[in-house]
Amino acid sequence: MDREHGLLEQWHNKYLECLALEFNNPEYYEVHHLLVLTYMLQTDGYSDVHFDLAKELLELFLKGSVRPQKVKGQFGFPETDLNIQNTSGYRNFKKYRWNLDIMVIGTDRPEQYRKDVRAWAEEVLTVIETHTDGQ
Image (tube, rainbow, N blue to C red):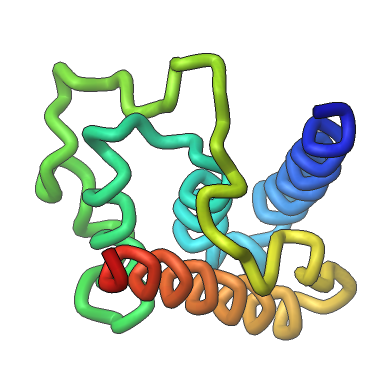
C-alpha cells in the first residue's frame, strides 16, 4: 500500500506543479480543462455519479464539440450538487491499466506542455472507453 500511496503522491505533486504553471501563464492554462478532468478520472477522483459525465465531457473537449467557457451551468452539473468528488476515502486508481500518467507531461515549453496534456487525456479516455466497452 505504501508504494501505491507513493505513486499517488507523485501524481498529486506533478498535478500541483501543472496547476501552478497554468495559473501563472495563460499559454499553459489553455489546456486546464483537460488537465483537471484527466487527472480526476485517472486518480478515481470523481464520485460514481459524476464519473461518466466527466468522461463524456472530456471526450467532447477532445473532439472540440464544446468549449470550456460554454460548459458552466449547461452540462448537467447542477448548482446544488457540488459534491462531485469521490469521498469514499479510497481511490481505486488501478481500476484500469494505464499506459500513460501525468508524469509524462513536459513543463519546459507551453507548446510541448499542451501537446503532452492532450496526448495524456486522449490515452486516458481510450483506456477507460476500452475497459467500459469490454464489460
